[in-house]
Image (cartoon, rainbow, N blue to C red):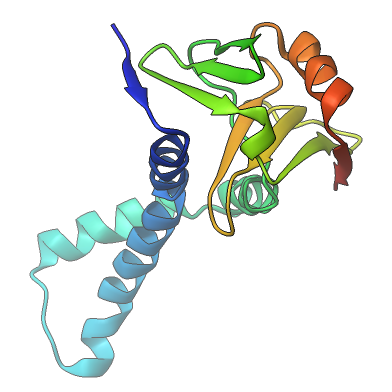
Length: 173
């Protein structure tokens, strides 16, 4: 059974989930500061904690891992979306877009959306786990709903929206 949310509630929930990588990055930087900080500030960490933090920092920030993290974050911040674990289901009924993620559902009135933007990954090499297409429905000044291109009926929904609204296509590099 899924929970029915308002479009704004859905957008807020999605924004919170999308901010998790930022908090992980802040945690990695905090671990790095904890490793380097005691030497310069006079604080002292016991040896086992220092070794544990040091190993975590090395494993989390290897050169290749940092490269992929940077690439992934750049796509993520440009609005691209990670592929969801469970395929989303989309439908249009009486000028309302129904979005079902499996856990949460919402109904968005197509006329109340400020703008639609189709983001397309234009890189020659695609990143695994990231969508090639993401439809962004901008609800307000700060709220937006991102819809993955792997959602069921995505192409039909996109064509249905294009019949009544303009959809801006943006190539993301």
